[in-house]
Image (cartoon, rainbow, N blue to C red; front, side):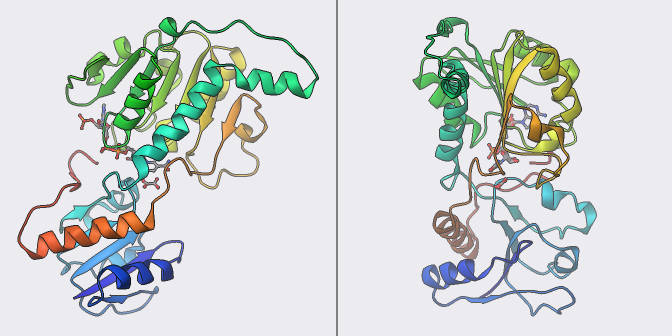
Length: 309
Ligand code: NDP
Ligand code: OXD
């Protein structure tokens, strides 16, 4: 069996080593712009180049080294019509829960304000927020959204969830579809975005929708930058309607040097690290799916090209 491994960032050698360790008989090949690819059974990719995609019509499936699929679906008809398989949780769910729990608790327990106070030598206990009014809204109740919901429930916050299709989750107030978006957003204190980037979700977090949150609400975006209208967020933060944000993803990454987010103290930035691909887990998951396909079995985590995730 031959598998082509490709990453837009070129860091492929550790993946080759991991595949050889888990699947000793497999031949892994790499690809460089302009090369003719030998016939391969499968492709395992992240941020692929169009020149490679054009040579993958004959593979049995394309596996992605991550959970987000927007960077491949953007190729539209140029993407070979073969099964496209994203990573499942593969160790990312717990990382998302850690990241979001940290950002929520930092805001809820006012650690951000205590950090500022400490810098000025101020010993000044602040009034505690009332948890029963501190509703956390999670947009996207998928593989990575659900561990976040569970973490928030663990801490006893009132939790709302929003998804495309209706869900029944114990202890969570659920909302589904665009028609329920207004009711979902109304009065939320912390909004967590865990949605995939699709035609429907692009620019969803704009002035209008963010303006529906409770006054002084907080935003956490860990999914994709283009879901957020960045100038609208700046306007709402400057006006005080939004208290601040923790952002891990941006419309342009790395975030360009002159971007106003860099100099806004109410925004905490991280460089797209909220849930990293765990190579060890990812390769084992992909290899198990390759074996399932070879045995004629179905696999989970197939991408629905119509839905865009
Ligand atoms: P899933 O596909 O498992 O879940 C997506 C969720 O979003 C589902 O609940 C789905 O609803 C909901 N959804 C999709 N479209 C809409 C819509 N139009 N309206 C309402 N709800 C919608 O995705 P994951 O949880 O695995 O991942 C989410 C995203 O996180 C990824 O797409 C990726 O962009 C991002 N990500 C970011 C990382 C980082 O480090 N920053 C790392 C990994 C992923 P339904 O349940 O009805 O289908
Ligand atoms: C992913 C990501 O989608 O790293 O896996 O953002």
